[in-house]
Image (cartoon, rainbow, N blue to C red; front, side):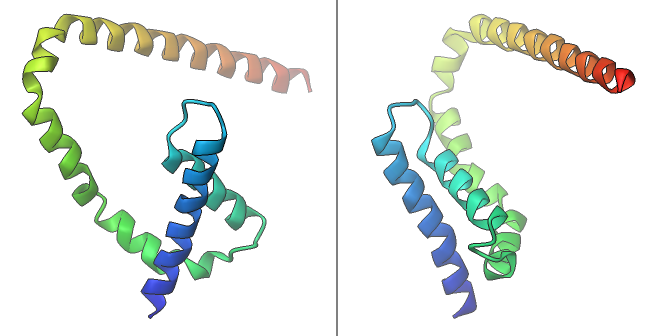
Length: 117
């Protein structure tokens, strides 16, 4: 019964995320909104951590099971990936370089601010 109640709280946050997704015009997935709702509920202590902790630990322990459908879909459509292989590699390379440069710049900026204080 405890697991059902805890899973109910998690599904409630996900459901609120779906409602927010349909209301707001931003291209953010509903499950991300659901995670933000869960974060807010936990941070404000509206929902104590012990009300969802056991089920969350079990879900995280078996997370690889949730990835199987995604991998199966990729394998099914592998020919689409091979058609644009070099474009995908180029985009990955460029975005990684941008990420490293921005992250490094932010770290240097923050370290400079810390040294001034």
